Length: 124
Image 1 (cartoon, rainbow, N blue to C red):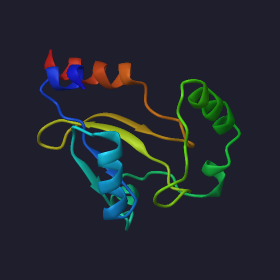
Image 2 (image 1 turned 30 degrees about the vertical axis):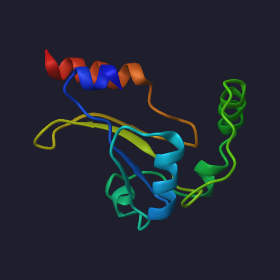
Image 3 (image 1 turned 45 degrees about the horizontal axis):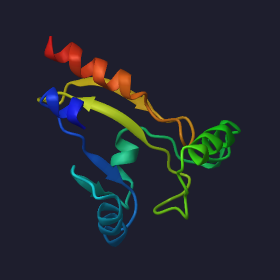
């Protein structure tokens, strides 16, 4: 967060659960950044993010799950549509897209270094 904000940027998360689930998640995780929720999935469709059984059953998920478990993460359930995959976007003022990563399967998150490189390139 410090590095992102050091570039004059802000992290914003859009979830897919209910408003009550988003509130509980914000409190449980002590989030310090904006959190929105879109149970209709309109934002996900507009961003052309993946949704479906194939991306939810990808065999690479097992490796990501084992890695997360080793790092101490314990998922106790899902909130929102389980088959909806996410993505990461870096958007400059005016709506210019600087970086885009569409998750191919659960746990296929963008590399934080790639996000920071996009912010650094914008600032130079």
